[in-house]
Length: 532
Picture 1: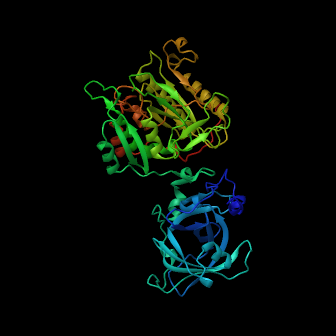
Picture 2: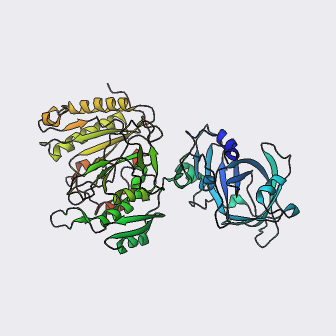
Picture 3: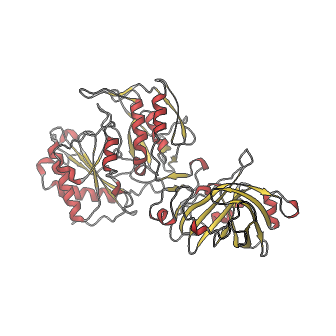
């Protein structure tokens, strides 16, 4: 199998392309075979016609696309085999990489080999012999097709012809270009190029290779299934995964005055509702879990090591730089069900790293933490936040704020790859010292909390590897289950704003009304300007 994919791997740099590196594949036990046709806009637009044969996707590039017109012959160039994980690859191959361009899953389904030349029905031997008859059962392509080699056998790119037979599925004049939507997402190449919704992790096992960037919303029947489970829990099928959830009526958050306490069932319901929105801030990042198995009224502790009993489908990252005694394997929330697993595991807070697992030493955000002291009032925190707002406006920098769900405010600044943690820490320190100099009576720069005289700290030290701030939309372990909620800059002037004013019971409605107010930090890499 390795030999079958050598040519494919040789052409690609899997540190840069999102395409899967591929694993050895085996046919499905029911004898079915998959096929996929991908519309690929590289230097020239073409259609990649791929058939599952002997554990790989045997592939042809069809410049004008397949057709149902039996009077038309299409040129098909036999290219290198692709891994089975490529079956649902839809996304953008970056510039400078082999095949750079956007790709959609134009058609997909199953196929069966038919008797070909000399009665041959084994598809591997038929391809080697230069003639393959096949029946397609796709969403666009159906009926009997034939692939025939017309050029010399054994060359790197053999010339073939692809044609449709005269049968009940034949359609005169049928053109692939008149059917431009993906059967996977319903989107066109232009839409995928503008906003990809999937990422493929090179080298990951097939079960964890595809990463959803645009997760679907939880369905009403999935929430109803959670509501119907008994108090002790059971199996919950959600986001395509079977989760074993437990102790659903257990109280995890005390109630606020006049409110009922919050159960584990409510936490899971909130997590399912918020996960598609929270996902982009967690993707490809190691996650530190703040666990409270006995609820927020009990003692919490940090849990970083993914336990051995975790289900095999959970995305994870093995830290190659872990010293003896340090965490070796982290949870990586690359799909909504993984966040639900964490919540069921007792994680009441979610703390993603500010660097991605591919480059753990290079942060993608600079963080500003407005940490109140014992004497700091909420109005004083707002003063500090507004001063930072002014500073970012002056610098022309994109940044977004969120209330912490406790007493403070945090600001995330998206940055382009390049600066390391020393650089971002120094930049944030200089920025915050400039702001703090305007209101020195509100700020202390002492490291020890006991030495700050109850004043606020503008904490730049969180800009370090494996030091994290709570993620957007994460609950906090306090009465009423408050949430670390993104806000608009204008809300800093709203007299009704409170740092813990949004809870898991109110956040879904706020999101429905206002959308994701943190979205601007995604896809906005920027250079940090020099500070005088």
